[in-house]
Image 1 (cartoon, one colour):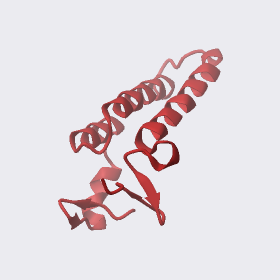
Image 2: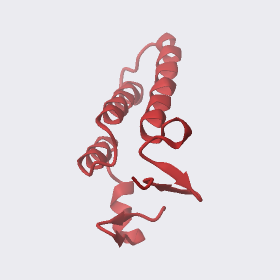
Image 3: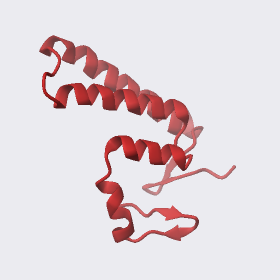
Length: 105
């Protein structure tokens, strides 16, 4: 797992482990509550979750809808990337030496 700090304290693997077992919705809400994602990204992640749930629970949609849903999910993922990373490093986060960091203001 990646290094993760809260209030300047580096979390141990044991402290990070519960996040790996969180429900996706709880993780989205936590990241939003900590202001680690923008509201527009949160809305798109919720839409991704909703679409995913339609396919993994009983009575999934007809196979014919899968192509359109898959296309929409890819579009949503790309929009989330643009929101949080921005084109040309203008987003809220950048990848520096393999780590996700907030650029200095």
